[in-house]
Length: 412
Image (cartoon, rainbow, N blue to C red; front, side, top):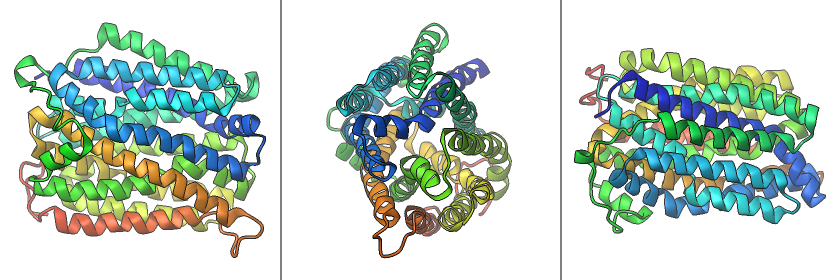
């Protein structure tokens, strides 16, 4: 098994560059949709939800295939292929003259895009019980670091060179990342740990059946689903919510997302490695989801734009939950099924991503219209808070008081 720090550095840098490209486009996407459709921001939110749902629908069926292929052929080729898909998606979006172009780009990325799942499988390969939660936290920190820079760059590029320019910049970064990974990214899964590709397991239903005998994994997969439904309300609604409620433009949206990235780096890159060993995985999961619940409720209720920032700080502290949950599931899955596990997680996340953008954007649109029974644009975040609190209850039942093999090793 590859254990060198260089291998970890390479995959973290790959995630970092990929997340910069993703963050760059967020501040400009509403304007591009409104330009192509000629519709106002509330209706443009609906279109954004459909785009996210298309990507998620394709990921639902294909993420387990990608995960199982990575268990057979290694992580490296699948990771590079998915990065190339995102580059094509950004390029098509930048050149779009109709909404059809945007849907084609999202479809291509949905078929081949599994970079985060591949990166998580990579981390599972190179980790052991002493550093697994910490390394999963570093993946989140790498994503957050890129996300810190991405929206600022995107807002600056959009205001300086036009609303389409960030998409071309993101495409260039993604494709450059493919070239970088081709030359420097080592393979993490040695041939002796690879397993035969089986179609019976390379589909979402087969993957779930294969993992169902693992009790903690089975329970936490449901928590993953609820968490993702809630989490996906953020990229689906954020730019529309802040524009409608606070009158924010691309620059203000970019700065808020930058703060999200800063908090992610602090929590994932620093706090996770300290808090999870001290509290243990079970209490870390429960505390993290409780803080997320409070953060979502704050998003829904704050009356002024500056109050979003302490709400972000509160909710971001809950980021310790996901690495702890990943650590529990990764340890139970074992070395030969990391790709299958991450494919199943990605598939479940895709189901959530099909439902959440459509439901949350429609919820925002309904409660933001002048004829709404109550004008309450924060409704999606109130619902998300309820869902995340459900994860607290699931963790209490699914994860036993004594979690074997964790770094802490104590009764939690």
